Amino acid sequence: MSTKSTPSSSSTPTSLDVANAENPKRPRVTTEDPKEKSEQDGCSNPDLDSDLFDKSDELAPPVFVSQYHIVKHILQYLGIADVLRATLVSKQWAEIGQRVRKQRKNNPYTILYHTYMPDHKLAFEYFNGFEVSEEAKQLVKPASKERHRVKNYEYPALLSEARSVVKKTFLDSYDEPQLLVTFATTAIDNSVLREIKINGERSEERMEWILRGLQKTVPCLSSISCGVIATLPNTCKALEMERSTYPCLSSLAIPKVQGLTIKMFGVTNQQNKMLKKKMEVDNVKNILGIDKKNEDKLKGIVFLQRATYRTAPIATGILQYLRANPNVALGGGIHEGVFVTGLPDDNVIAGGMLIYGEENVRVSSIALQETKISPNNQKKIDQLKSSLIPDGKSFAIMFACNGRGIGMHDRPNVEADLFNAHFPTTPLVGAFTLGEFCHELISTGSNAPVESPRRIDFAYTTVFVMVSYKHTSETQDPK
Image 1 (tube, rainbow, N blue to C red):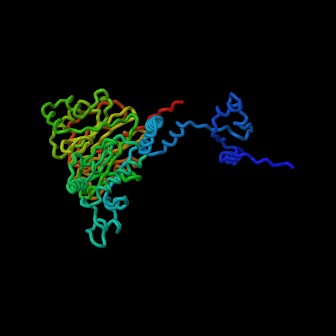
Image 2: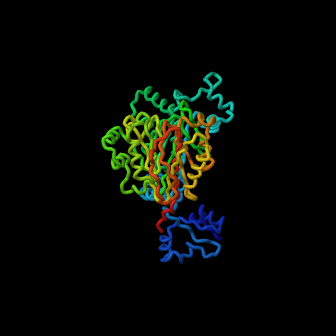
Image 3: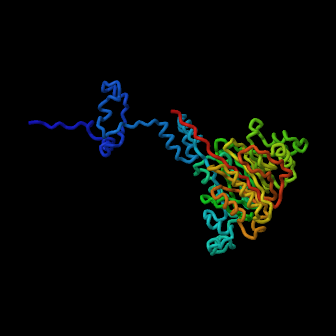
């Protein structure tokens, strides 16, 4: 009587065997080391191992993927915050993360906080002068049992809401910034001062109450103004928010791009006094932190000055520098407050950024001085559009006199709409200021001579600074 042999546990089909049997044309997946397998079978060449590779034409060879390519493939799809966290796993992951960051084609993006958060549609209705819905009307009427209270600077949750919006947008972003430029209304600043007074805390950097933690990750340049301009997130529809009594904040995250370098600067009281004694171009370079080795690559300056120091000699010093270097564009304005990461607020009289660029970067600036959307203003916008690099990316900053906007055009959002009509995909942020700075320059990529500026300070003017760039070829992986 024959006895049936009991199958051994080694013959029990595994999940990999089932997967390979269900789809015979898929690459066979194995967890066995080919070298170890060949040694066990007495075969020195794993390619000749009949057990490891099926000789059937219907089956493909197994796939062995290195950890480097798996990790790199995953990190390519993660936001920048998650990539930075992943680099802490090991030295190899840190190297992979560094390469992913270098190869990533970052783009600019905007951050927006306003009275009607999180509903951008209501903000657009109210500030753009459209027919306001009943829901929006309830938010701007006086507080009562039936109505919502308008969010002014005394709104208790204002700062926590603003912090949450800024932080969430920053952490959720796929793109890595090299500088964050923020414009806020007076109501935001009043709310910060109120919070400091209530808590009895002393703060040398007030914007840290809004940008808490971010200033340790990326340099932040901020100002307090009469109103802000911002591109609505995910729509690239610019909106002018002129009322400084409403808490509004807009930020532009300037991306890390190969060939584009942004350097932030701050001007202190001590530097101002030094410049009064000795007004020389070299002195101005030292105060602004202009890199002498890369000065030929300096393409633009964004200049923010505090209103209480509008007569400070730094503006005259910048004028002298531009007369010696007319191929550098300039745009800026006078603000109620200017804040620079790392410098105490009370010691800052001005701040800004230096824009350096290789051949893949262009910086242009224009000033709209006529009181209506005249043919001359339209021509300047057309010239600004001609300065864009074909098939490139761009971002822009706008400084508009607080006497323009509704007060001049009798309706809101006129100049932002003009910008949108020509640059529908360009992120834009800006502020309503107490005076403007500009050295008009249309960059076309040539070294054509530019006329030296006679003046850089203006009033009743709108200034646009446009940065256009094109991503260079990616760094190739080692084979």
